[in-house]
Amino acid sequence: LYPDAACRELSSLIAAQFGLGEGNVLLANGSDDILNFCFLAFCEKGVVFPDISYGFYEVFADLYHIDALRPKMGEGLTIDPRDYTGTGRCVVIANPNAQTGVALPLAAVEGIVKGSPESVVVVDEAYVDFGGESSVGLIDRYPNLLVIQTASKSRALAGLRVGWAMGNPNLIQ
Image (cartoon, rainbow, N blue to C red; front, side):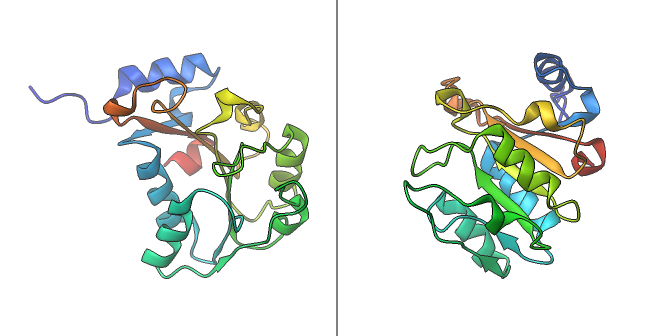
């Protein structure tokens, strides 16, 4: 027998862990797979991500010929939420940032999501367990928010290649 391709049992457990419904979770072959889906599905009008961040954002933008804005980092290697608000583009931020370790406060993430209702905001939380506050609690309030996590970092299960997205069921579909 082939295993369940939708991974319904694991998806159900992740949904329960985060207080979400099963329709709020998508599993894939690692969080990079989820990011790949995001660039394909949500970046037709372009993308914006920090100039210093996870290197695959640039790889995906180049691979799919997506127009990318890359705002410069501010003092202390921080991002200015105003650079990511109301751009009309998909927003992709790692929180905490994969290269700098600097985390945006949850209120700043919420400001980006709230200020960009016409755009999908992807928050890559691969390192959230090492410092930072998860945005998962905002999913019920913002249908344009997609939060990505992985089993490979703090959960020390890189060999499993499991990543998941959490968001509004319409985004998950």
